[in-house]
Image 1 (cartoon, helix red, strand yellow):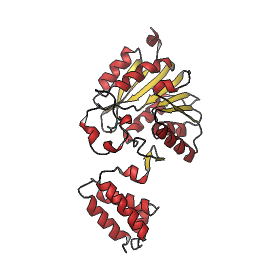
Image 2 (cartoon, helix red, strand yellow):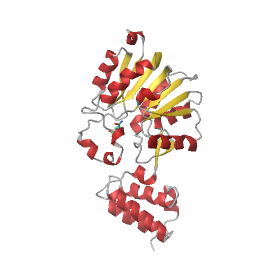
Image 3 (tube, rainbow, N blue to C red):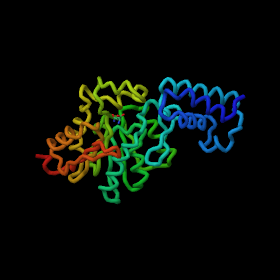
Image 4 (cartoon, rainbow, N blue to C red):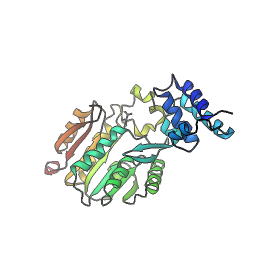
Length: 283
Ligand code: GLN
């Protein structure tokens, strides 16, 4: 029989050459198996794991050593302080994506608004906005029914009621309405980019990561489509790769958006471009 201290020690050894945070990974996975908080591990270090717990832990260690991201092993990831369910059908929400939420909350008034989150995945952006602004009506779209099911389950667990989930590709999923805000974290990695074979990316849905030969196809499509779904004065906000800001800005400008601007994430990398749909878009 193994106690918690021994189990943690053994798992940490297995992870030394696998992750940059071997002890943390071991703690998160063991806490998950024991259905408790990480602090539990240090409150009851002598607790003996049952055979089932040992087997479950061993299975997770094996997957982690094979490269599985922690979030898929626990089935959870925190975004904007909300605990979200994630599955291999959804991208694992990234902390830098919180920049989109932050910018929207900063730029838009706290009055009832109509918002669309295109390609919602686990629902991260829509849920964060809906949680902060219960009076907004948010349409969340996805082309993956499996991802939509996860996003809906997250809304139900968090008791968030102001999101309408719709199936379909980008703006074509939306009803013929004019929105105050359209936001998206679309796929933006080039199809043959070697990054897709590194870290967590091989385990994530490629449909949510790769976008054409140059990674720019979906950004381009959304910039153009959104003009038929934004109110005059409405905002488009798109996440993109750290080298794509110039391209994104030129697309926004060519499509007639005004006040076009890129914003840096907490790593100092250009990560989001925004623009306002204005009368120039119509000419
Ligand atoms: N930011 C993600 C990454 O580089 C990509 C997410 C996306 O394509 N939308 O891992």
